[in-house]
Image 1 (cartoon, rainbow, N blue to C red):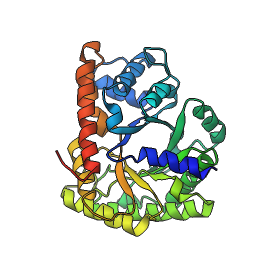
Image 2 (spheres, one colour):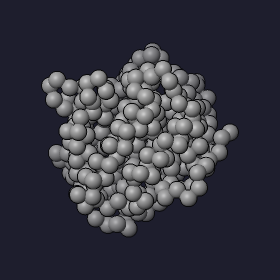
Image 3 (cartoon, rainbow, N blue to C red):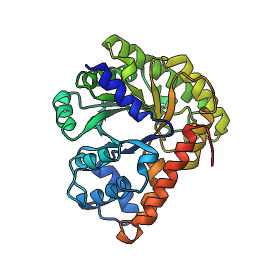
Image 4 (cartoon, rainbow, N blue to C red):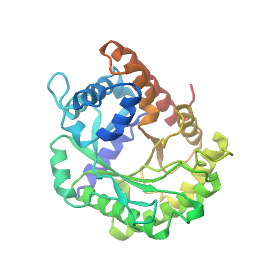
Amino acid sequence: MNKNILTATISAILSKGKGILAADETPSNIGKKFEVLHIENSAENRRRYREMLFTAPGIEAYISGVIMQDETINQLNSQGKEFSAALKEKGVLSGIKVDLGVAPFNADSIETITQGLEGLGERLDQYKKHHATFAKWRAVIHIDSLQGKPTIEAIRANVEALAEYALICQQHDIVPIVEPEVLMDGTQTIDVSNQVTRDVLKALFDALNQKGVFLDGILLKPNMVIAGLMCPEQAAAEIVAQKTLECFKDTVPAEIPGVVFLSGGQRDDFAIKHLALMNQTVDLPWVLTFSYGRALQRKALTTWKGQDATVAAAQKAFIEQARLNSLATLGQLA
């Protein structure tokens, strides 16, 4: 691995006041969002939607990188240029989702294991030809206290896969974004979420160290410590920020250069406020920024609705969300 390439890429991603747009939904997942708005889920409409986002005026002021999916990184914009090449001209880096989704961990469990290690090195080489400089792999951790989930075995299998992925990426001079997502679904309290997140992060860094992953050359994309969406008791934003930082201080090594949070289904304003409150803490060892999908795209998509006439308004909505999240990385709220 070339550590200088890895650290230079990370430095660019973690530029002050900027974050990542996660636009890596699979065709089937984005189709669910399109269906609600009566947009045909065609490759051309998916291309038009991504072009609306990527060409939003001023995107480079708030977005340092864009995570794409295989279909998108191979698509051309309306001027016949690869999306990744057009973004590069604006100083925005391109990333690629390289995991191939999840499979059941075993026959009688809600737990899953992420797939995609086979042939990963060869895929990375192909994506580099499309200007990819970083990658993403998502592990999914389910909480169900009544069923004793997550199990130690499922956590271990997922973090070992994350560590193997990270090492392969670094060997190909691609920065790995390591995403162990403890899902917000369910009725779990914030204290249960806190404990599970701690267990997952501790196991993750044990696995990364055992594999010999260069910690200065990765980015962590975790969940915030939040109660389950169906929990009747939701913590105040200040408590979420406090518990998340306490959890990370106990589990995330200082060598990690940056934490690029996932929004995980939070309300857009909550994702902004939680990030801002955490960034009001001084002397943190890591940069704290965003790698949001829904929390950046939701208003833009519902404004666009697949219509050419609404592109400018949708782009304005997207840039406004990016601006608000940019302020949050500086510890500020609009």
